[in-house]
Image: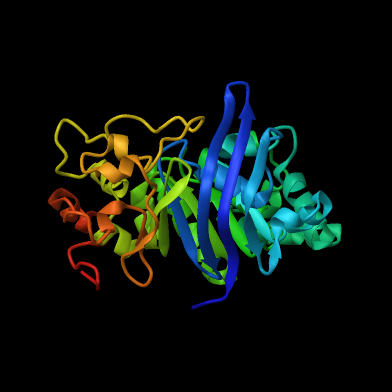
Length: 348
């Protein structure tokens, strides 16, 4: 196992609103290792972005991290002052935000936005920073970087702006890169290019990546491990091939079934119902009200994380030895080749 760079333990985040207290994150645990890509997937509102912003300490003023530990290379980020956190944010942990169109200042040249970050985090001279800015733009696939440093965001396409945002995130030479839906606003061809770019950069720099997305197809191509989030909790986590080939939580089944295929008919499957109101989270398994295989205990008691294998865990009472046997739906098993081809997983 490679060196662990991040450990999240029992993370709990709340937002105080006029309507009450929203329990956005309700006890999240995971680890991240050097050079690893961990994908976090789930519907909108499941807590993916809030988790990443909690790591960065970029939550809104009405938010509080009331429980948990965020251990980054031996130090708990919760206990750092704002000034101490500024030295880590950008230089050691960087983030690509959701919308590249709004992440760049339209009134400043690309060069100014990139060079300032390099000078702040790496203490380069201006000449050194300009040279490094050109290197980063070239690394991210921007041609004629010396000339393009003088251009404004409006002079670039959407895909080019996303590459520039990635270059800015890499400017501090971080240990961890958090990519929050970095391909959402891009067409399929550009998505593939951005994913390949991130993989190439990761191989060169050896950094760890937290990749946040709702696109399970993207996860299959980029991730080493996948964490499935629902209603502020992780409901399944493990190596991507184990989770995709042997999913255990009914919510994971629903996400996989909702992926379109070449054989999808006129109606695409949708998970029934909607996520619960986290102003008043339901007792037990929050997904029980939307599941057709829910047990009585699912509405009473929250399930623990059951071990599926040495590296695969799922929070569902269906894995309790006393539970009735429920097989993974055959329709989901047939979808294996969508993500990994005909060969099958090694543990299948």
